Length: 117
Image (cartoon, rainbow, N blue to C red; front, side, top):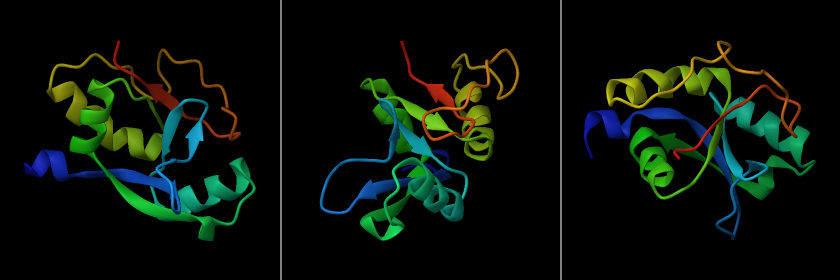
């Protein structure tokens, strides 16, 4: 794995004993910090964060999943890490807060959804 692919974009939460990630609709939530993903768990699903494993979301893994049809919802902090790397590879993305309708998702948080089409 290259240095770029191993860079941590943020954190995701995986329900223990399953392959299910904390999602906003059909997109996995990526938070900029471990504390934020724990806060997202309690505000979005009302479960204890002890029901979830917190895992690092690395650029290479996110990119692989996007290429096979997955979607991700980034908070501003995690998107600020993801955006410049994706732009360097020639992907067309909007900046967080620019040309984007900032509407709170089901979690009540400002998230930017990314899915390749």
